[in-house]
Length: 132
Length: 403
Image 1 (cartoon, rainbow over the protein chains, first blue to last red):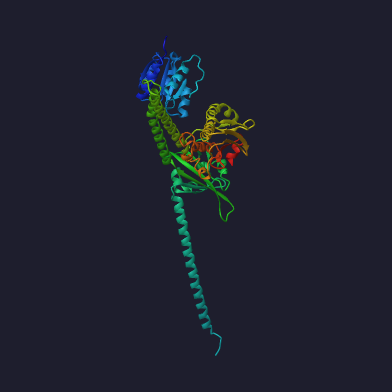
Image 2: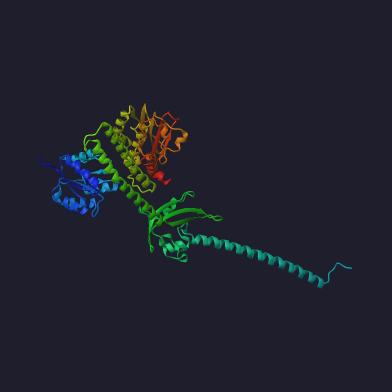
């Protein structure tokens, strides 16, 4: 079976490792990027089905990367789930306005809920996702 | 011997009398002079205070022409008092609030026309000292001995205060972010352990891990609540106020809470939402408050019911959450809506007094931000309680704000 490929752009090592592990365990192909610049390079490479994109990143913030992704017609099918730890509506609202598919508040979800969100975003013809 | 004075004597006497008058007059004159000086000194003293206070003060007559313009105002607006006296307010000051309202427009002044009311707003002033945040405050005074009104306008430069508030905001934002990141890792890896991802574990170990996970969840909720309480305290929260149907809101949102009540063997009854007028408020925030009331009711009730009802009351709709739970005493009542004002834990018979102790405090601030009120009643410990909040009926809101 052709496994879906996921890019994790997250600067916090512990969280990056955790998500890497749970996603690999669930059968996804996983790659990581540790800052905004490499995150953008990887995300726009065309190799991925979904990006887990942290918002607060060194070098370039997640929303900026999201803007670049949305500009590129080749990446039309690339799904983006924003990772945040600040449940401030404005940032999330802005993310949706730019074209994010979903978001998770990292501190409020467990690993199985992350997998659930990822599957929901990757499901064909997913409706507007709701967030736990 | 005769009574008759000689003309010389007569003259002498008149002279003496005149002299006396003169002395009297001199004394009076001296007194007047002294009094005048005192008055002048007092006037100068008050003037000096008024003209040199840290706040910019100026006075407008009923035609919005300047009658006084203190030194601080002169500095703030880069002009002098003689230049502006008698001039129209608009020719000197043309200011707009952040919301675009013209500051000191006739309507603005009129808002302060009720003698007990005063208008107080913050706005940004672009002056030659750069951008300043200024708080403006208009009060109406009736002059003694004269049948006319004047408007005293007081402007305070609060740029520094605003900057400090902003720094505090940023600090809390950073701290809360920095706290959440390690909590996220702790929570995630505890979950991995508890779910056997690190190898087989005993049921006992799983129980410990589950408790540790609950602890982290509470900590995370506490960080979130501290952050929202802090934003609310500083008035730095965006409300999306619109006309909201409470019925729709209750129908959409209460399923999960009903399941939670039933889990504890309680019934969650909802009534009287059918013919309610819409209210003005931020839908998401109303849900937050209502859910908070209901979760509390469920938490503090061991048997019986939780009822949610609503009714129109004046220009408001009042929503009530009544339970058959532990209730509270008059003494406890005072602390309910305060920070960390949870009921005495020793009385809590529910498994665990979870929660952050900030829920009702945040609820109160949110409802008050939406021009409503909150309250609670109980006939005593063990006798159940009612927590309510009110919100202005849509349409009635505008006139209420004007009041």
